[in-house]
Image (cartoon, rainbow, N blue to C red):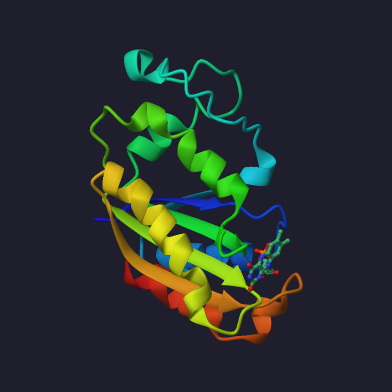
Length: 177
Ligand SMILES: Cc1cc2nc3c(=O)[nH]c(=O)nc-3n(C[C@H](O)[C@H](O)[C@H](O)COP(=O)(O)O)c2cc1C
């Protein structure tokens, strides 16, 4: 049976390198028969977590931005994919803010157990994504989920990733889930 896949693309550059990897992953996963939903963080209204813990007793966030309508969708997804540009050898702030805001899912039973990470940076070494994976592992450990795959793409200017084999790898990764 097809899985429910939820892709979070976090770059402020829509059509940028990590976003292209997210699209290729989505294409592969759809071709393999899964249902895929993708959001770009730059399209939604997203505020910082207030740390108020209101969510721990109400199962939703006290803030009125676009997050409350996403919780149920994410909770009932089987696979989550986080695509990020690497900023200072970490995930970008947009993705970190998004992960912080998933705290309402903390006390609940979630369907997602499998996580994929797609990251792009200028650095020629895949080592550039080490802290990104570690950072996301900090999040997955709290949700009893596992990082099943992490793909790195080397590119700097918007769209340059098309000149590498990373989009093909992202497509194949999406097909393989
Ligand atoms: C604020 C900022 C910080 C960055 N830090 C790094 C870095 O630490 N290492 C690196 O190799 N590239 C760094 N880059 C380059 C981006 O990671 C690279 O351009 C990437 O392909 C952008 O992905 P995107 O097109 O998905 O936004 C940085 C870019 C920005 C804007």
